[in-house]
Length: 221
Image (cartoon, rainbow, N blue to C red):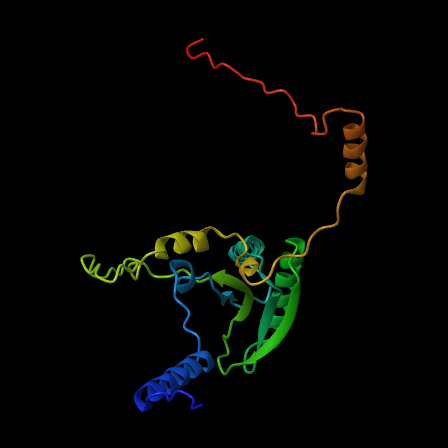
């Protein structure tokens, strides 16, 4: 009994198909871009810095206000440690030191952590640099539209999804949350026991809210 013979052409086609399948399995996978992925939220490093001229008597009123404003901006963006960089060189070291001491006091009162460093400068009037680093969300540039009539491939427009993620990036209070979540605070065990006891007794577990008071303005009285 003889076994059936496979035509040479059919065998060659089958081998080619197997080879292509193997290449497809071993080759890099193709990931389709979606509006959310091509305009995904990203974080980059930013810096806020002011320069203070050294004064023999310490800080001026304007410099104190500038330091307080810097500390407020740091709190708003969740910035890091504030660095006081003193000039090292021909500048008046004594005046720079007094200015740095006064600046550190103002920042400490505002609740900011401060560290000191130095930088080289040949300028005898080199300023004291006060700065901090922070994370900021990258806002994509929108408004770059393709040909809206090119719908033959039934694909989404290249700018589709940009505005949504741009608005989201502008509204995030702490951009560092994009990369990693913040640590969870400890639970209030006393409040939890109170809620459980009220639940067992069939009482309302929500906290009591003060009654709303409406006022009527009388114009012309």
